[in-house]
Image (cartoon, rainbow, N blue to C red; front, top):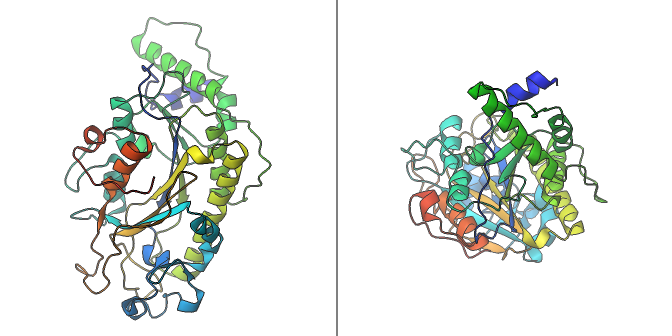
Amino acid sequence: MDRRHFLSSLAALPLLAHAAPTPGRYERLLILVELKGGNDGLNTLIPYADAEYSRLRPRLAIPRDQVVQLGESAGLHPALASLKPLWDGGELAWAQGVGYPEPNLSHFRSIEIWETGSASQEYLSDGWLARVFRAAPPPAGFAAAGVSVATEGMGPLLGARAVSVSDPAGFVNRARLVNVAARPANGALAHLLKVGEDIRTAAQGLDAHTEFKTEFPRHRFGQACQAAARVAAGRNVAAIRVSHDGFDTHGGQANVHERLLRELAEGVLALRAALLEKDLWRDTLLMSYAEFGRRPRENGSGGTDHGTAAPHFLLGGGVKGGLYGQAPSLSRLDGGNLVHTVDFRGLYATVIERWWGGDARAALGGKFPTLDCV
């Protein structure tokens, strides 16, 4: 990438303005894991004891004797079996039935709702984390409020003092191309160069070349987790976002979903091991999100179509493991879809209030019940 192209790519990034330190507990890191495309929650956290599950999914239901049982009613897909020791150790929590009123089944609109933290009929221009950081900015000494790693766009960080990088080490190296010595009279160009200067400052603060004894998986999500670990090792960002793509399983779901879940488990376990190396696991919270779940009834193509509520995991050394919220009923569907039991903004409120010790009302536009899992 040449200097001109690199500078032009910076124009879309928000200005990294200096912010005053606040009482926010941003030494505790949040890592958001997007399950892009809409993960099938019923084959992730499986209601194996409910007869309706097998009736709705004669081909896709995971046989009861293959389910990794977490209790008398719910268990994990066998591809997630490697996470069972974390469950047993109290580091893994599942929020059940997460969704929102008047759900939208469009990928583009529903992920916008999730990432802005809006109501179904509300349109917001910034990410929910951007509003959190606006109300209580991370310390000025942080390289950035957040980093979106190895994925397109800023997502929940849109509008924040944040950067998006596909490769942290490469980002640091390219940032050195930016020459900000001159201050042109042209206001637009001066602003662009100021953005470039702030990006270079952020790059200098990222510990992008950190090495770990931990070996990361070679698949794309594993490499994204390695990049996230390198950013986390710098201890000077409040939030990181990574994405795991491919969950839009309309057809031939069984094998694809098994691979995706196995990669998910491999990636987060490697990330955990790397953060344990750096003594960061106790102060790190991983939380998943997606635009929606899938419909309870399998379709004629051996897959599942766009649905509504789904479970999401919270994982970390400071997590109080267990099942939270109520599993949606499979016998009382709404238009063939699950009825949510936990508002997704309650997950965000849990992060803001319980993890960071802040006030969620300004960022979320109201009060939402939190989960006692952190």
